[in-house]
Length: 90
Image (cartoon, rainbow, N blue to C red; front, side):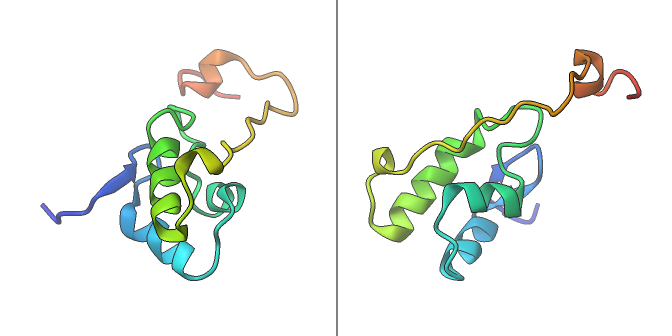
């Protein structure tokens, strides 16, 4: 066991990944989402987004409620549920 602290199980993003990105100057939740793909896995951020917001708040000195939730984006064209959950080819 490596002892990594996982933030996003869907995309294997660690606390260290998030902190490194914030330390490099990225403090916008939308940009963090796009760069690390947190909130884009099967759970759609139910687990990882609150953790990322907590880390972002701690690193920037903001309160968590001051950090907006990332925007949800719907698919450009309709997608069958089976495709989203991985049970069928597109």
